[in-house]
Amino acid sequence: MRLLIGLSMALIVAIGAYVSFATRPLVQFAETRLKAEHFAVTGMVNTGERLVAVGELGRIMLSDDQGQTWHEAQVKDSRGSALTQVVFFNDKEGVAVGHDGWAIFTEDGGLNWRETLFDKDLSEPLLGVWGAAEGPVFAYGSFGRFFVSNDHGRTWERTEPGIEDAHVYAMNGGADGHLMMVGEHGLAFKSADYGKTWQAIPEFYRGTMFGLIRLNADEWIAYGLRGNVFKTTDFGATWTQIPTHLSIGLFGHAVLADGRIIIVGQGGVILESRDQGASFNVIQENKGNNLTSIVALPDGRLLTAGLGGIRVFDGGQPGEQK
Image (cartoon, rainbow, N blue to C red; front, top):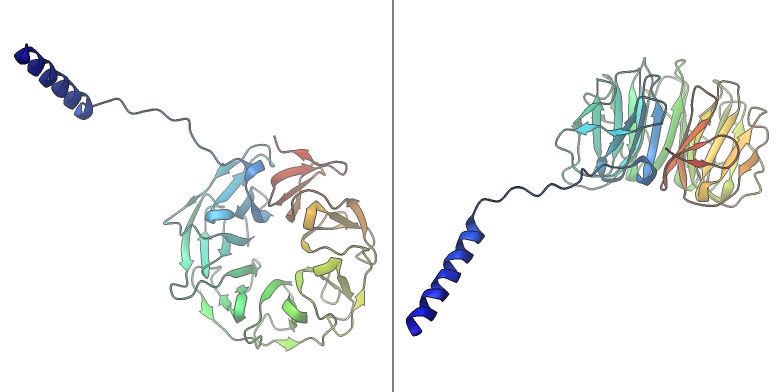
């Protein structure tokens, strides 16, 4: 009897060992895809050929059918740092920047990206990037971080425009070399020589500005905290406050082909101006997730992006992205 029990136990152990170490077929998991409506976006642009959105965990989403479907770009050796902004200089070359002083570059329209700048010592973020088809590219951010590239973001050089250790949140400019940047605590600078030299703009608001709209060399609009919008018609020498009757943050904008100016912000608010920024009306109330970006689609609709993902706005209530 004892022998039978012993043989039975040995058989159980042998079977258990075989099951434990035997080759098994791999478990098939459903493919995991990042959905556009769930992707926290901090920056979005229309390259003319493709929509490109950047955001959380250093991920980049692309659409080749005007926002109907999205797929993810490839970032070589990604750091996983959150990206904050993206710019394209033509339909092929672009730069995205983000936390940890990280900058990545593409030369195939956004399909593939590679690192061109990273701060291995400090984790201070780059908060924005600006450049045009002709001229230098600027990456800027927290604590006076300011870099310039003369080859569309392939290489970078640290520069000192005079902002000391302040945070810069936005820059804009044109092919005539007239540039402007704004940031925290009333910081505002301008350049008339494509950023070779910078001049401080007299303080017109003590709070923080998150965005700049250039209408022409002289006319600019700055917007930011507490619904504040200011306009200058003399390249920053004087400014006029434009009432919005809001007290929320404004974070992104678009200038449409028909001249309308759209500003988006906290809680999903959307403002519109039809008179070159002389006045603004609310076309979507303060509700929902923060919006950071907005671009125009060829059919006239607007595509919004923010912490709640990417969605179409047709002028009425925003509908979920298909």
